[in-house]
Amino acid sequence: MSKTKEEGATRRDFLKLAGTAAPAAVAAATLTGKAEAGELPTDETRMQDTAHTRAYLESARF
Image (cartoon, rainbow, N blue to C red; front, top):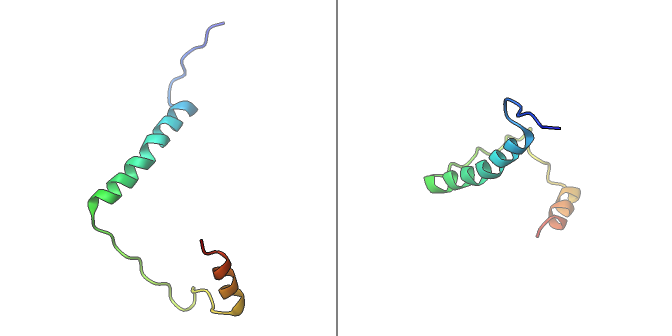
């Protein structure tokens, strides 16, 4: 039984690429040295300030 080489990318090739592409993207973003802040959400999309949301945010802190 011999395995034939499939044409195109395989899952293993994808994982190799994904393993090297993510750190490279982080390094590229770090080396640019220029970060832009995103815009704050408008009032319609912001989370409401209630006792429930405050309790959740307090419990989610590390």
